[in-house]
Image 1 (cartoon, one colour):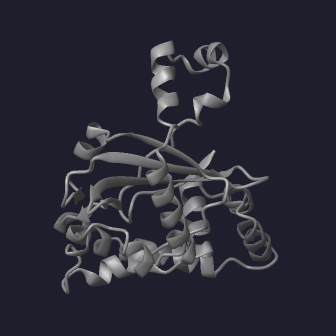
Image 2: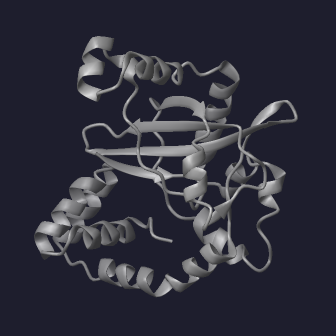
Length: 240
């Protein structure tokens, strides 16, 4: 399964397993290796309160609108203060990067904040406000191997839920700028893809079949999988 995973604009997390509530408990326990207690806890994450569901609907609408300002408006003011004249160029690029839409049949999971992930991200990001909960939005594109996930950190302020996106550290901003040459290399490779392969890949991307497009490019060029993923991302316009 290919996961298009996003957290705000700079944190990448691994996709989680599908909701266990779709399966009988005994079958899930055998296939997942989870104890009944673990399965019960996972099932509790799918019982999302109405106010969080309403926030998720607002977020999905903003995300799918491709209007960065609508997404920004859902963030805590403290996060918006992270964008300064000195780093605005980087945030602008990341905010305006092309993203495939979230499908209407997305699934939600609301869970405690994974403190281990926060520690792992500390070199590259920091939170202006301590996050209270994690909201996972997962979706699957029909008839493809492609799926997507957005992980949002939430805080409750002024009577409503808000996205608590992580701010980029000086190191992560520097690393992003230093990586510009590599990103341009893959964009140049994507620009050189000739017909009929180019048309095949674009048709797959139009159907949200990025995984199939990566495999097709890999088979056609003999490149490694990492190169295939990056070139196809560039061809799709997903590379900042």
